[in-house]
Image (cartoon, rainbow, N blue to C red; front, side):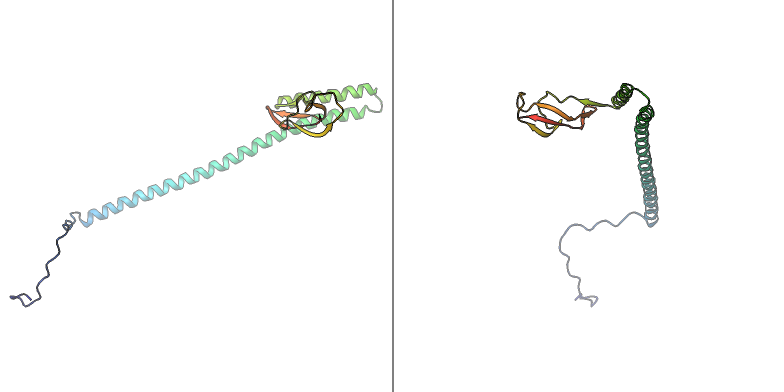
Length: 178
């Protein structure tokens, strides 16, 4: 107890770090700072919304362009097929009246035409007969036991294989010497 006031005496505070200084910033300054921070947050939010909308529009545009490209390729392939159909229909029309050699020549011309179109699209047949069997290029469907060819040599091509821009589009189905 304090002898003069009759109140309990204050306990001495333990020694420690100094108390922080009283803030020197006014309430008005803090409110202004808060308003600036809110404005900046709103600007950032609007920028985020615009960026998200731009990204969504880009995705839609890319999807449309991809679909247009696919449609273009489909139309090109259908044009090739229709040309083949036209030539085959002409061969069938003349089948009863024309010379069989002429029909055969028409079919050969159609075949060459299709191969030329495929070549312009990057598709080329691969040669397999006489080559060493390569499982990346060939699909062995039969084994030839009585051949004079060295082992693992393709002795017969049962279905032609094709490359597309140097990559296997369809492997050749082959008979391989054992």
